[in-house]
Image 1 (tube, one colour):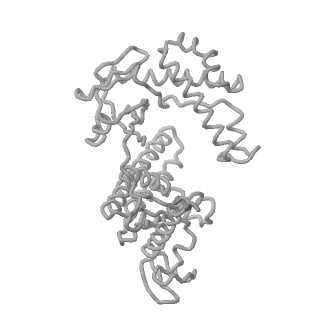
Image 2: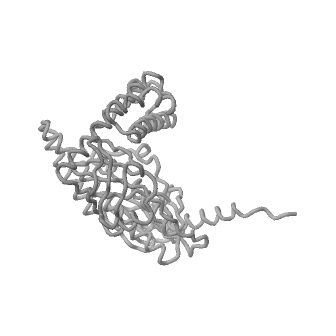
Image 3: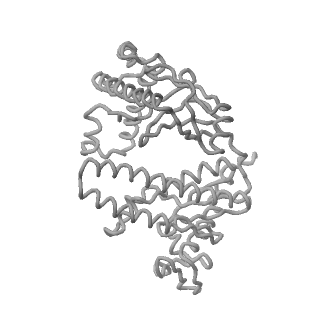
Length: 387
């Protein structure tokens, strides 16, 4: 399976200038290529190369850099067309879709620039990279990362790496081909995981991974954003972007920690993981105004992605189940009643009288649904007996 490992570059002052200049020139060239592609009806990559390659070389880009710029532009238009076809940009003639279709794709000045093995090499023992720039080849640019990241880079790096700049810092996002563990085809049950806002995740084992710290952090960020938005100055807008990125990193780190604990618990007990299929939930639910900020900043999709790839690496089965009535069904007697959910945190069955934590009760229902779904899937894969 492919994962992306982030290595932080530690360039000297003159090296940082060269890296920043490279990103600026490559993305300026990408914007020009995008305009050519848009004007010519977005041709295929080979045809687009015939119209742009010579000019990119004349602008001072190396052969591989020019090829990557053209491919980056063509891939961006491919992604746009896929999103339009899938309806992610709205219906035909909707404002958002018209805006996307009526102008060339634009690239930010610090947008990522791909590198392959011809213009980027890693010296793991020395902890440095040699990288192409518009000012020439830079050698001995130091990089760093966590112990696990550096080990993964050394053993499994394969394919392209992207150079990006964030808040004045440079990073290389390296693609690594990591082997998957053998899938456990006969799990000893399933660990149900109920995702929520007050409690980010609750497992059927009774472990409550509370989101109180994250929610307090987000509430503080919301107050600060409100203050900065009222100012409306350039520096306030710059601070808003910085805080937005900081909040995303904080949430991602929280999701990494939670997903790692859940997968480790399932792997240790030879079980699978069952999750609710919450796709499109933001479009389905109706919310009061105070709830909207909490729900729309809820990174449950990211947590699900982290759980999925960590489970694959560990060989842990993962299934998605229908979330309908999991919070209204008694995990003891299977009685379904809307009134069973006495409050956000309390579940009380109207039939058998059992009282439980609402999220724990839901996670046990999810675990049972997961086991049923897994067995049904296995049965469907069994070939029919020959007559």
